[in-house]
Image 1: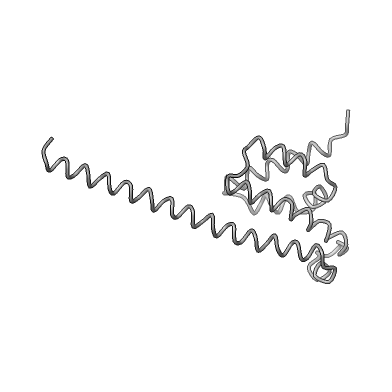
Image 2: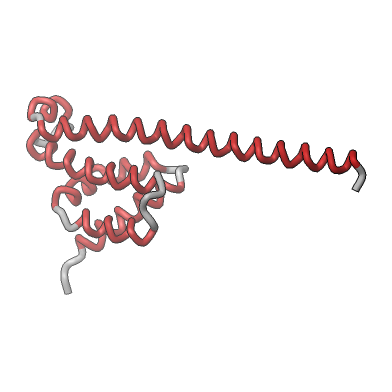
Length: 148
């Protein structure tokens, strides 16, 4: 192999490694931001689901603050699972299993019944979030089917 070809191949290899590192760094930065924002949301959901005044302030029209507190608690559980899913700590099989378990709870079902369509609209275009919501919707549908 000619020295110029070897030098060119070495340069291409170094460039490829550099690009791969930049892509990985960008992905990690995005995960860090996503985690931080999710944790802020989960903390607010914890506070609002425990504080009647906060819940009364934010409760949508037609929903009693106590009922809204329950829904926020269900949303907190969904957000915690969603974060684990987005970080890759939950497999597809586990997601379906955990979704079924969450939807056994009336609190999560009440939240999904009221706000699930909003979550689905918000996730459009994000395949990971769309898959999460699909699992939740299917688990909700299974939980709502009458026992045979």
